[in-house]
Length: 113
Image 1 (cartoon, rainbow, N blue to C red):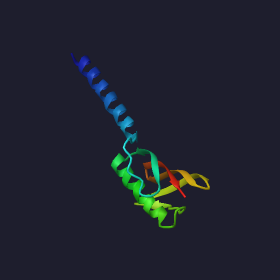
Image 2: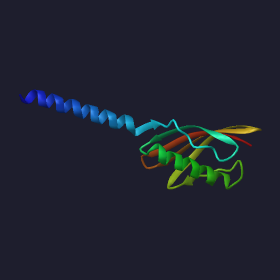
Image 3: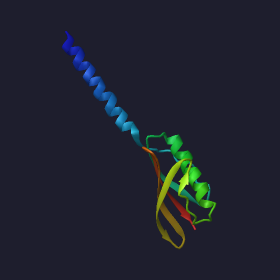
Image 4: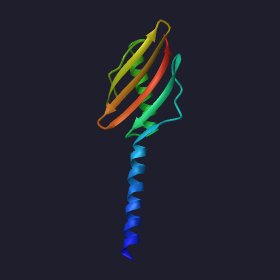
């Protein structure tokens, strides 16, 4: 009688932990409107919600553009950020990674220069 209970409990734990692992890294389908001339193209978060990811995106945009259209920003809202750019004369295509401990926000954007 105890054996079916143990099997059910073990299966429940497997489902619980596999669901938590899957929820820890997520792609966010809804993106905020890009404040300037361009657009956000993707958002992926790990250890934070999509809502928090969007806040970090917008805060990083504001920090970056304080230094002009091609400005950079290395930290925002307690996150340390790095950026990889592929630029041509008329636009910037970039991927930004912001980390805070195990929390991570990765997003990409395309901006007209």
